[in-house]
Amino acid sequence: MPARMLNFSDELAGYLRTTGVREPAVLAELREETAGLPAAMMQISAEQGALMANLVRILGASKTLEVGTFTGYSSLAVALALPEDGKVIACDVSKEWTDIARRFWKKAGVAARIELNLAPAVETLDRLIAEGGENSFDFAFIDADKSNYDSYYERALILVRPRGAIAVDNVLWGGSVVDGSRQDEDTRAIRALNEKIHGDERVDLSMLPVGDGLTLAVKR
Image (cartoon, rainbow, N blue to C red; front, side, top):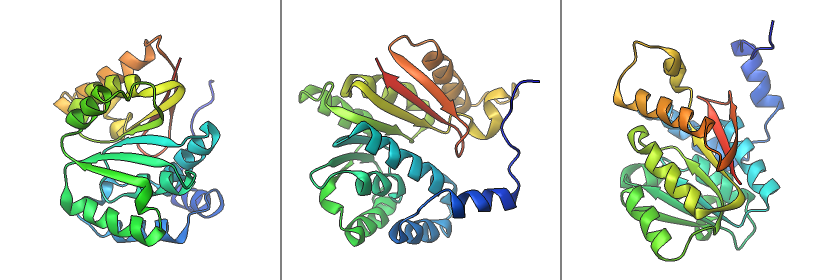
């Protein structure tokens, strides 16, 4: 029988979060505040934030991209891992959610490292490309509207440097990717991108069972 993922009990998941992650106090506070919001399910987990921060450190990143910011946990985790002159270019359309993010970025002392663009992400990414941003980013994180995932991925591939990484969130979509009865637009978009990245010779990939599924695509 092939090796399979562990079936995480609540006890084992708690052990992972208390023993396997060193979550800064400001990130824990942001996570707890966001947990009380109606859209709390959109927030990444502490272990995913820690993984992304370590990826940024391994890459020696100084310039990163984020598509979908919500209340700012992922951007804060990455910004804390960047050098003092590092930069996160963040894309979102919600002032309501990103106002929370701004408050915590300031509290953590990294507000100067994060440039928030309140506009449709495709517009921001196209502008970055037009301004000569090709191959200038070390890392990109995609976690926004699923129907546009392919558009975000293609633009991130232009913007990220060779040997840089693109992380795509929600690629398991609560298990819906293997449920043939789920044919809504978001599920079909995620399935299509998963299959596309699997066959994409422009990248090396690894799909991880972290959170709701996270694909790491390393640009060749």
